[in-house]
Image (cartoon, rainbow, N blue to C red; front, side, top):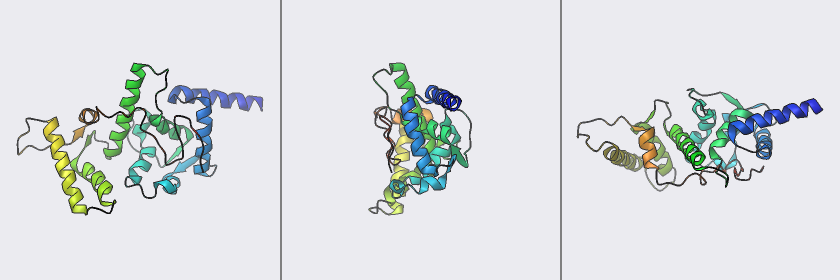
Length: 217
């Protein structure tokens, strides 16, 4: 029993260093993971599809895919997982961890960049390093058309106009016949530069507050 407890504490400490969560937060997140997985060692997309709070979210699939995207494991690996274990789940959750009073300016900037990268990955679905018109259009169409107040064609026109505006801002000398390949990560950062997201990027659909993590049913 003592050896098992020591090993568990060692594992948690390793995860503390990787994610920035406290041991208590990791323990609470593990309880939530067990609820989602039915006490199994891994979860699949089907487990997250069953979360009631996600049912009517217009970008439901993008959110779910983000958990299985290898790019969100704080590494450079591309591709996706079929299932993820608790450590992978925790690494994704760490993107939503807000700064504390002890967080330095440099650490805050790193956290912000990671959050922006996470959002960028959600839109860059093919992992080519650019958010193309097709990818951007798909998100905008889903956000607007599923609201029930706007037709798909109108949503597509709005997406096209928004992308054109982004292109003219990011590439001011672009000619009328030039082709805009898509939004790069650097351009995406510029678009979000005035948005305060360090403490606002939360994950509520799992009934988890990453400021003070707790379990929900």
